[in-house]
Length: 266
Image (cartoon, rainbow, N blue to C red; front, side):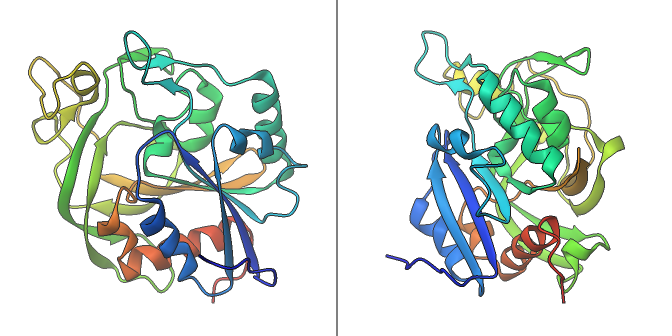
């Protein structure tokens, strides 16, 4: 059981729950970071802290949660709206300038909250939905894809190899590429033939894409952007140990946390 690092120079609140994951393996990644204290808080409790008062003792908010989806509904997933308190508190947090790092399935959270996805820079859809005024298809997923990640020059990628291997889940999703700064791309093909339909999966047809189509998407799997007064980084890798146990990925994540928290990256 990890101790509480009271003297850590970087204090992160890590919001989790909503999507299955290996808690021990995920936490071990943060525990291996020198000078970092990571406190995991499960949803829905985490939402109560996503405001300036709740985050006052933390330097960065890490989103590894997927709230807003009810997978026990009669026709799952039912889309749940965030509370007015969360919407106001999260906006105030960004207006204050608190840094945010979003990982992997956080891109699917709060599907009805358009502002949230404008702040994140994209959205993973379990069902077709209106995105930026246009009907978008459900997103695609593919587990355990072996690919080479390529970094782009930025403080977040400082000291990271220009290329490194990853085995992890990939998404074919909505990416607002016109409003983000690329950090990470990959050599995997982002076409519908290489992904499974999320809508078919929740309807019981896992690993299927019959009758499903999705437009081409850029091979962009990591980006930085401004979210109101806050710095925000999204990293698509992070589904499992193929990413968590990768030294370049761990370094990239730590860099991202330090950059959004305005800590010097040396």
